[in-house]
Image (cartoon, rainbow, N blue to C red; front, top):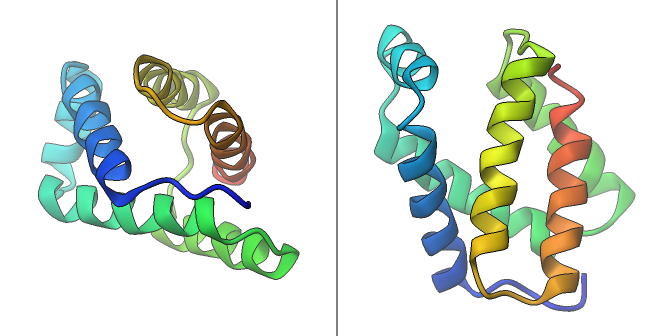
Length: 117
């Protein structure tokens, strides 16, 4: 991808996304049951999003898909995936960012999400 997303925008997007996601009782309960460190999760998400927007080779897509599968050994229901992705898209749509970067990021996340649904 020729246009990169600035770290400041990535940080803002991750914070906004988790603020929204943590309003959903399902995710609050799930994270609590799995004893998830939300701050560590946010940091991993920041790194992951940076990789998604800066790497575009087929080899990288394969590595990203494997990474998603390793970090999410459980199955996600299509409904839960739709809610999660919907909140992420809403977050991106609320933010000012290059439309081509936004659309490409949505495409990549949707591709990877399908790997764990």
